[in-house]
Length: 346
Image 1 (cartoon, one colour):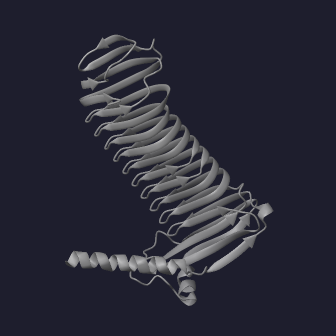
Image 2 (cartoon, helix red, strand yellow; image 1 turned 90 degrees about the vertical axis):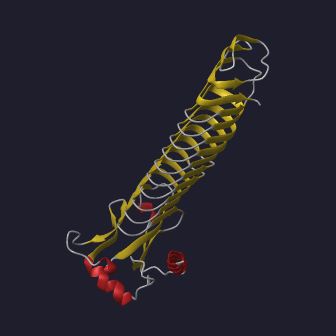
Image 3 (tube, helix red, strand yellow; image 1 turned 60 degrees about the horizontal axis):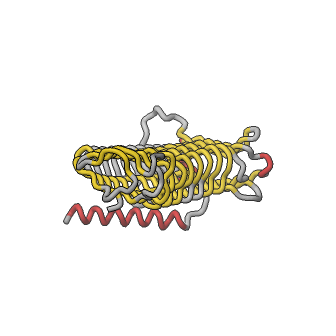
């Protein structure tokens, strides 16, 4: 009961903090001529970064609050200015680069964490802006940008919407969500889940500790997790999906597909075959719905293989193995279930 009460208290504090954030006013606001901004460089150690592309002047809003969980996040202007004496805060143009930085002046000195600050930036820039962003304590949100975007956080999530170009993002402790993004997408997290929706291009998604959800992707997709499941629907192009710790569930796949798991089953609905179909699991079964009316080279092996009645098949058809040509041969279909069964159109 005591631990439950503590949990409720913690959630109350968190809810208060977020309620305050929604009505929070910026400590500082600066505007810049949009035509002079080609690049954006942001560094902060305790806050979030929010960047959006739009027309009009470039604008930077700086939000400052106490960086602790004692239930009091808002500070008076006098308190902020007193604590800021220990920080370097920069919002300025350096050539064609808009620079927004905050850091402690003497990071090696002893420090009372209760006096630390969370300094966040909310920024609007032209849509064609190159960004280089980093925070060690907050989330990063990007929207409506094109070009090269490079960003990382050690303690927060990544939220990406309507980005195009060379996109590379990293987080060590949060989830990743991307929607309506395209071109070169390279996202990775060490401690959270990934959700990608309505994206296209070369897409690489990696997580060491969470699940992956894919919806409406088109392109060359690489999805890898060491600790969760993979689910997806409406995938076109090519998909390579692998997990060491969960199941794989896919629907509406019209793509070349290679999927593997070490600790779960595979359930796939293939509506149109690509150049290849390769499914493997070390600790589960494989269940597939797929078209069988075109030329296929079948190589299926498991404790038990069930493919029903095959017409126009030339090859070996046994209880634990199917190997041969269907309809004269064509697309290579490989399936392996080391300790389970394979079922096709059953």
